[in-house]
Figure 1 (cartoon, rainbow, N blue to C red):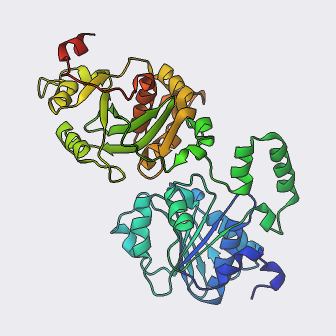
Figure 2 (cartoon, rainbow, N blue to C red; figure 1 turned 90 degrees about the horizontal axis):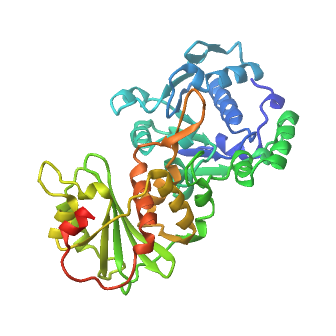
Figure 3 (cartoon, rainbow, N blue to C red; figure 1 turned 45 degrees about the vertical axis):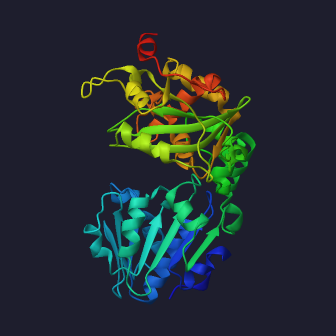
Length: 423
């Protein structure tokens, strides 16, 4: 038995001892989440034989797991004679078993060995991907099995936060807890917290110590802009009386990104966003022609293509501007501007941009996660990373570059391809 004085918990963790399919605790540093989860599982494992899978998105070695935390708590609870701590496993005398693994390398087949677990503890769960959740959840299927989730939130749009905080499933208990909820918060951390409160940026302090979501990932190119963009992310309706302009970042194997924007005076409204890959210009053209927003037809303006849209493709002998023009669209060239100047331009116009949260959600996610590569030797930021989020960010940069050209004037006549290509 574990003495009562050794088994005390923060009041907010009492729910760990009551049945629920999902048990979720989120918050900042020093809250006692992980410590409490480890203790609760060890106590339960000492009272009944259970199998516990301790997992996270990426685990390259046992040192990246909660193995050491559990081992420390075995000793703290006076359970060293009951549990045997092995290099990659912890075993109880009654048959209880704790084992460890990462999710990112798992498949539905390899996860089958986890079907018999009683509790799956997902630590640092803010990093767990949609793919991993979709594979893991149906695998933990033993009657009465539970999924325990502990994490420090990063972005509201992260899969874990969206799935278990914004849209919690049935039979889910989700609590927020911070240092102020931990009666065992140590003095050494209190001194550190006070120093952070006095010296850190408010947003950084709120994220680290109060468990608040960040406006963008650490080091995001548009971090400061996203930090103040909240009031401009919302309904942002389509106005059928205004011209709708399409700003393209071209791609085929890479993502094709299309921003649909309207302009009122100096205000730019992003009312829709399209992203895809392995699709032809004919496919996108057909989608755009069939598009209706808020049950209203589109009053089309120009389509803006970057410079590579005016280079002939060897497959067709035509450039993309010519192809789109052949579908009846008015095509314009996005002004040439190098990447860094374009990023500066995007920052300059950011506070004039309004986003439709529902229809441009993917674009917002790209802007939150657009970042620079970090030199491993100097630890200095370099060029922007080319990844799944850079295409939407590139389209946004192009939109900023041509923002002064967006207008509600009528356009007419056919496109002069020869003039457009040679100017």
